[in-house]
Length: 285
Image 1: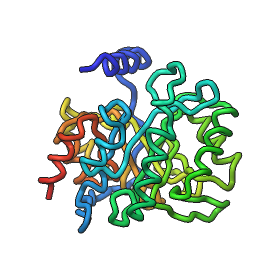
Image 2: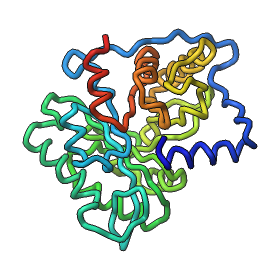
Image 3: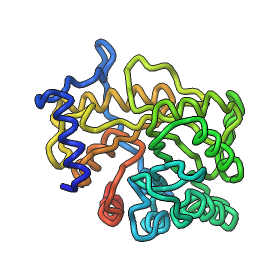
Image 4: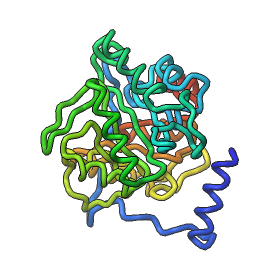
C-alpha cells in the first residue's frame, strides 16, 4: 500500500474513532434495486468507462491514458502564481505542469484533427480535482476554459455537448462557486455526497464522485457481499434515474472491484495502473 493510501486509511480510522463510520443511506425506504450491467459499447467496448485516476503521475500524462484507450482522466489542480498548475501538492509554478500544456492544448489539437479525442465521435471526460477554492482560482479557471471550443458549453439551463466535458470535483465550495458565479461556462460539477432523496440532475450538477470506503464495505480486492451489492445497485439506479453518472474513488485497483462495478452499471472505472485496467476491459464480456 502506498504512503498516501496509508495516510488516508489512518485519517479515516481516526475520524471514526477506529471503529468505522456508519454507512450513509443508499436506498429509498422499501427500495429493492436490480443491478443493471454496463452494456458493451459497439465501438469503444467497456473502455468507454475507463478512467485514469491522478493521470498526471504517469510518465506521459494524458498520452499514456489515450494509448490505453481511456475515455476519462483526472488531474489535481492548484492556482500557483496566478496560473493553473497540475500537481498533487502545491508546488512552485512550472510551465511543464500547466493545465493548458498537459491537457487542454493536446486535447484541443486531437479534436481539431479528428473531430473527437479518439476520432470515433465519442465523448471524453476531463475531471479537474480542485485542491483549493477561492475567487481567484474560480475566475482564472473560467477564463482559461473559455479558450477551448471543444468543451461542453453551458448557458443557463441549456447544455451544448462538446467532444470534451470538464467535470469539477474536489473542493466543494470552489466547484459550487464556479457554477453559480458563471451561468455561461465550460464545466459542470459533481458531488462527493449522495442521498437517495437527491433532486434530479440539472445543467450544473450531473455527476457523483463517491468514496468507495464511505459507501461500501468490501474485501481487500473489492468483492461485495449481498447486502453491499444491494447498496451499490440502489446508488447506481437512483443516480441514473435522476440523470447523473457515478464514479467511485478509493476503490481497490483490482479486477474484482472493476468486475462488480461493471455488473452494477457504474459509469467510470478508475485505475492507477492503466495497463491492468486496459487488459481487464479487453476481456470483459
